Length: 89
Image (tube, rainbow, N blue to C red; front, top):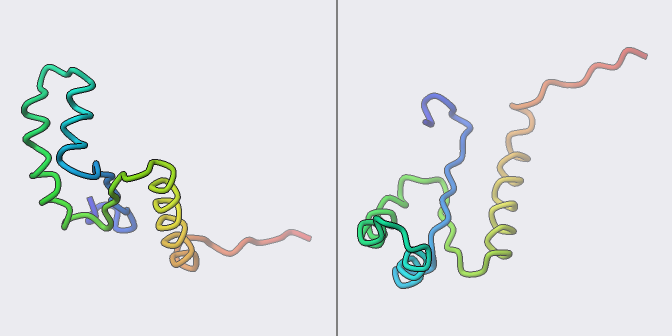
């Protein structure tokens, strides 16, 4: 994806632990419950391929952290992303 959209950020949110992940899957009562629980380790090991990984310890705090990262990245890119505004006065 980065080759096609180089300014893209990949920001997955992972459950705080394998136990938390298993609990969420079990609560949803999905048909592929076992496979989803077993895939947690693969998701964690794939974290190195992302720009930033967030652990969902507290939902509101996680959202705030994500906003901070995204806004910081946008601010750092401002000169490259926007054309100066022209006024017709």
